Image (cartoon, rainbow, N blue to C red; front, side, top):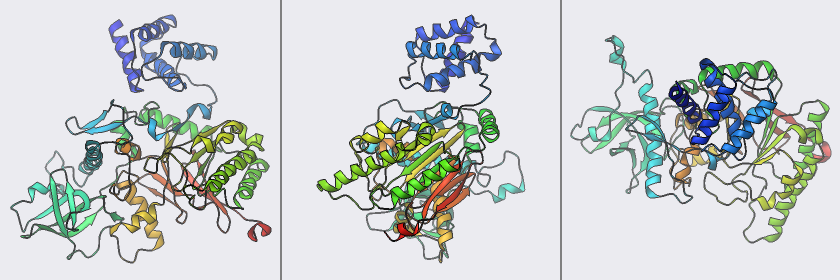
Length: 543
């Protein structure tokens, strides 16, 4: 009996990526004995302890006896001896801001057919092996989604539908079989001769687009994975008949398979728990909102008046957001290297913003401010993921704004069951510059949909080669979009839009400064966003 209970204790804490030493195990057993917790309530009671433990700033992966004791005493003071939640939920206790450099590293294991936790500490420089592993990870993750798709997964029962199923092949299966038709999954890349090829884990084949009328929907760039159907020729090329994006897998499907894996490092939840949390958020927090702003140019004369107008509207209408996310660029022009005056002005602009925010005590008491750097902002590194804004520039914000968070780019917000990914990059321009195929005569609305589709189908924020978009290979998992998030914020200088694709809500708030002040509000209870526009005053337009 004791052995069974110990296994349950270890299993629950392992679910939250925690390990237990002998002392912590004894303490937990004593707690269960002291409160006479029944076998049916053990897991839920322990999950309450584990969740509260992981919310502590000094929590470590190997459970600290001191921190665990403190959490237990705190729960006793609150009268929480079981997993039964309070009558009213506190949004702050379910709100987490996740730094890209703190996310656990999970890598696909081809042997086990699942994800494995990598314990070795990542490095900023990475290695040749990790660069290969990151590309291979992307391929395997996409491939297992493709093979689960109804058009590819063969039925176990004989039926006429089997004739409609398509079989994926590998490039090594092409050899010696000219004149036959094949369907391949691989990465689009140029070889040394400048010819476009399709690469998979076994090799590569040159592509011939001469017989292709038009590609499928989406943006096909160098570095993205594509499903290609064609005929192998005597010249050892693949004469393409059709090319398309790999099918995207819904979040619920992925969570039903990998729900036990804690991708964010904040505790895994089951689909049942997600459903229960979803109901509570919808019923108990119907008016809670997040604000998202992009290109908040602090050096522009209209930006601070625009933010002031937004804050005034919030106070006047008693519409205080729970979170305000401010994405860069925080300067309208790149700061010249060695230009001390520009750098000083950059810091002074953040100081002015700190004073403005601090002048609204109703907002600062309850609102979390999140700062996400853009491509022109000063950070430690220029590769993805980017480190937060340098602390020397934002010291006054830290002292004057109590709930301020300086995030990486990209970063994530976990709110109850929802995962919100925030990414500030001009991806539309970057993708279009490196296009190798797109449907002809695509309109602006089509391009927005194609961009969203391509990024989600690729399960990656930057489906480009490393020479186009440099990334830290040991942190490539932080750019992964698998399982699909609930919400993806693609902050871009391109026009605003919002699209829901395969259940994932994607939106671009657009630049804050234009003919008006524009931003987006997100409502967690509905998992939907709205565009907000504040008119500029006449005197402001003439500035």
